[in-house]
Amino acid sequence: MTEDLKVVFGKNLEKFRQLKNVSMVELAERIGVSQSTVSDWENGKKMPRSGSIQKLADFFGVQKTDLLTENDELASNLMRVTEFIDIPILGTITCGEPILAIENFDGYRRMPKDNLPKGDLFFLRTKGDSMSPTIRENSYVLIKKQPEVEDGEIAAVIVNGDDEMTLKRVKRQNGLIMLMADNPTFAPMIITPDTPARIIGKAVQVSFDL
Image (cartoon, rainbow, N blue to C red):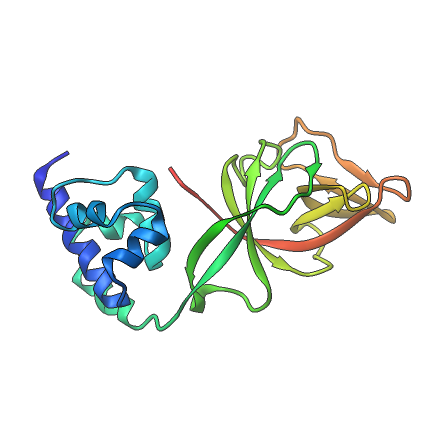
């Protein structure tokens, strides 16, 4: 880790924090570190790990590289972003066999409002690899709450009554509704009266921490 990179990162962090008008204390609370850690980052004394850099990027609504390189034009663009919103993370959804649909609140991810669809939004964290390579394990999938999706779109689906939840691509064929995995090693789930399903939302965006 070069000293120059620490200094560049620290200056960018301070610049973005001031543009967003948040204190070190608030920023530290948002990403789960101490105020002294934020201070060390801004002063170029320490460099955060990749996961913390991603949290900072999500908070400011920028890319990780924007925190690691000098870019004065980006700061001007950021000033035009007028509003961010905190979107709740409501637990884990499987990309494999269905799991119990327990909505465990797991914090927030901050997103620029201008880039988001209208409606009720929440994040689910993925487990399993049935939607790979489209959605890999431990990704954060942004869900727009809605009762239906178009053919071929990815949805968060409650199956077997209200007990289990999965993330699958919805396919309609010859009067049948199938929940399809993007990973070809997984068999489709066919929805019947004996295996009912209910769409809770459409997957509209995916992100992940390195």
